[in-house]
Image (cartoon, rainbow, N blue to C red; front, side, top):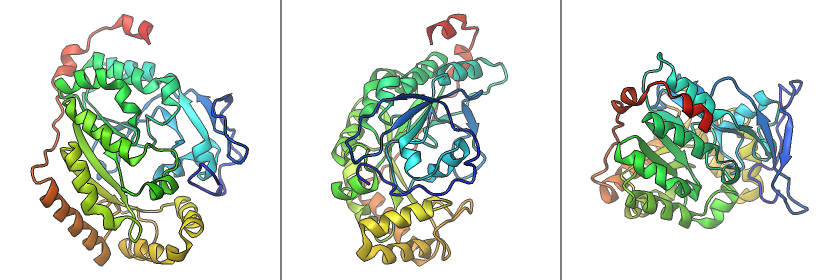
Length: 349
């Protein structure tokens, strides 16, 4: 299906639930493309407590549910059925918008019970996906975080983040923000199939360079590494992100939990049918014979001989191209000084 990652809609066990109300149709596709719908939702909270010990940050925040980027391997696809939609094409063509997110965040940070801890922006879906250019909810969230001097970590594939360089630069001076740019291949043809509506590889490298030049700490996330498809690129990827200015790097081995398994398998057999079985078998090799893996502490990197080979390649690439990588330390001390009754804050959002 042109312009999409997933080529099917998997069954939704929650289909009897009521879908979100249609608000507007913005994207105008060609005749052979599925249109993108943008739907308003009104959650009561915006921060999600992260219970998984291998994530790193305690809270995540997602102004959008579903993601038009269409990454076929995305684990977040499994959240879309809870909203009444499929994890397949629906995930990337029916985008739920949380317009009240900045106001909900401001209310939470103003609470006397809130203790400053870094929040992960885009822990589930990309906060800089295409609709953000119009809605600017992520920018409003950053404005709230800056006023409260509250730390945040951002992960994105989009060069749209450069629009907010003014806010990010000021926050970076106070060590309140770090940015992770996700990049998993230097092959533009593979990128177009694997992540059809994401920024090009060249733009992502330019984004790393621009952020780094502005004094913003950039972490390059080489993810996901897909055995048999892009694992051979680890060394050159590390070279490119290091030269672009990344200060740190990490990787995640692909895992195909829930509906992502059949969606990815269907896509792989249509796009790369000659080597589909080889790739699927190598993924199984890294996850105890399964495509899926939910074991905390193991799921992100995998285990077994092939997983060890990937790890060894990554460590060698770090030693060769990023020998002085630096971890980022958030400043948690400024928040309490900034937190006080901000009655005008809610009027400004």
